[in-house]
Length: 152
Image 1 (tube, rainbow, N blue to C red):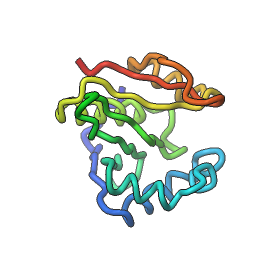
Image 2: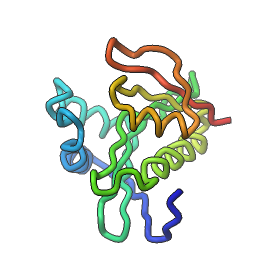
Image 3: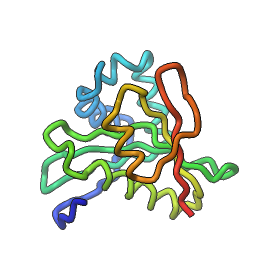
């Protein structure tokens, strides 16, 4: 686990900030995020308006980011919509840092569970989520799984 006092989790606000962040990190998706999402601009607007986005920095270097919805009070379930780590920093525990921070944020807002969807062929992400306490709850689509973790 990363134990580094120089890490900072910074909230990213507004459509321009969210777009800039996911344009930088979205290139590490295959295909890039703006190609994978048919309505990238609509997605960015939705995330900026309804989700919380956080960038993880080490000193002044962008390490990664996470966007999550923490607004389902009736189900008490948060939902991670994006998580990305800069390719130079993968495998060093930063993904786990972002997951744990997102769980803390969701818990502090009264959420009892946190969920996500992961591509079936993304073995490294699936392994990270499994090690972080997420369990499979079904298929999201023909190419993805749904996973969830208790926050209690």
